[in-house]
Figure 1 (tube, helix red, strand yellow):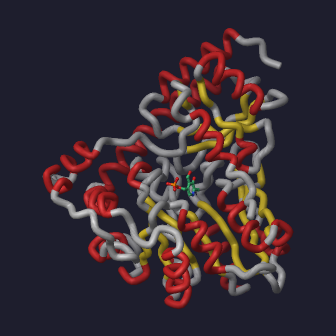
Figure 2 (cartoon, protein in one colour):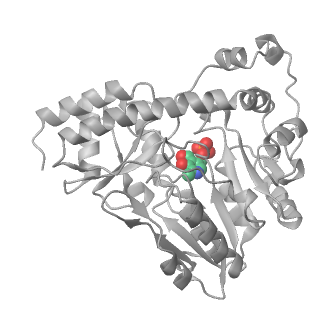
Length: 375
Ligand SMILES: Cc1ncc(COP(=O)(O)O)c(C=O)c1O
């Protein structure tokens, strides 16, 4: 059976390990195993002593307990440690839905958040709830959302901080969102992969797990903590029956989390605040460089500063970002990400601000623009 190509991952598979100057990564700067363990004051030799047997399918109980403690309402039983964060989208789509259920997805979005749900219920049963552009940012139109709900609607899918716009709802908007799903008795799949990456001046909001019982929350260590190579993610599911169904699907995919990743995730969780602060500082530093860059190229870009997360959606006043990006990657080794893979139009690119090499890559981008005649 075919599924829509996962365009973002195809794009990164082609360019991520071959293009030297990258401006579009959604993860934050990573660290080594030795650095992580030193930070957490865990002896590196302990990793060497770890057995490589199967692990507990729902996840290491100590890790689940530590993660549950970061939520107000979740208990260790509610946490399902995944084989990879993206697996959580697959498991939730499978466990929550029957063919012909209707789903509403905030769009644009990380492609799996649209494609996986379309695969399960059929493309005509997935309705896109579009972000609304404002002059300086983006906003959510709750009236349109409410109009899309029918008696067949089972699930609303959102992601905040949002990839690719960098949008975070206000506390009032989160309340409004929860009121709507509650009123219509909908499940809420809430992707919090960028949770905690809140920029200075943006009011923070609680995890959806703490404000809505029927939320299925996806979180993990890849983005906020800069540890995508650990492949550690988890779902928070407070509904026992749904959790058991998710576990059953998980036996067909990863069975249990990898032992080395759980060991390192335990260490990472102890120093998560340090990692998070380091990554926010890097993002804010890079955002300042980006603002300066965009001020110099005002006619070419429409810049909307993100409120949270590690990415932003930037308009380019050229006919095709895809064509331009491909040419620039070949000619100058500079990588930008055409946001068409995320369901946006071909005049937008997604930029990422979490990497230490951002400044160098931006200089190469600037030089390329100065040498190039734009269409
Ligand atoms: C919104 C969102 N959800 C889920 C994922 C999947 O995370 P991972 O690649 O760590 O599996 C990503 C990765 O880019 C993402 O941006």
